[in-house]
Image (cartoon, rainbow, N blue to C red; front, top):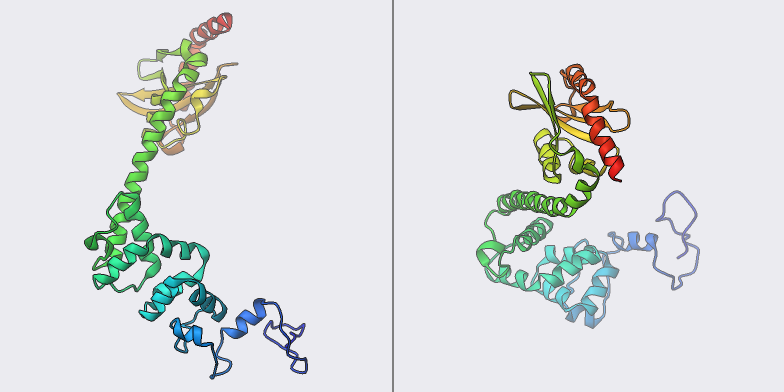
Length: 292
């Protein structure tokens, strides 16, 4: 029937003739509801496992899968409805079924009941990421899925941190030459007022270490590649109290950050140390300009 142009998408013009129409949202919604209790399906659909219930799967999707996908037929005949729903939900989920089909069969052979299918697939993907054996029943068919899932969430997070650090290390090695070109003349620059000591960060690795230690982005945001600024670490009694970025144009402080970008209570004292040593910084700056 034709639809009416009303507020509800499931309103039909009951006086309109029945015609073959293109599938659309309205028909999908109607056909997935309990509209009429008796239905007829082809013998092929019955042969492929359909016994009268769509199991809350859209009929068009279910019948398409039963007619074209042997895995859907296997799942409905084995009454693995949760896996069948997952397969029919979206193309990406269908790909998961195809990819991990052997793992699914091993889990089923070992008596595993698929209750929270999405969590199980998340868990299997984490096992794969960690290089685990997806044919091992003890791993793929856990007695307590949530506990096993949460355990591997922690493992994957630790692995990601490790990989991130390794990526940073490799990036630091690659960027070291770029760092030394504009900042090489400032390496080893140090100044103090007897209480607070300022020292340049002298390698890309030191920028990343400072960023990790102080919970700031001086490393991850590549401050070491800024040509017109210079970064110092400020310490007092061997303890880092601030990370200081100054301009190489006028030697003014651009920012002075305590732990986690906090306000440094010694900012004025640090500014005094910088002002007292402008000449020393300027000499190295001029030396760099002459060489360029």
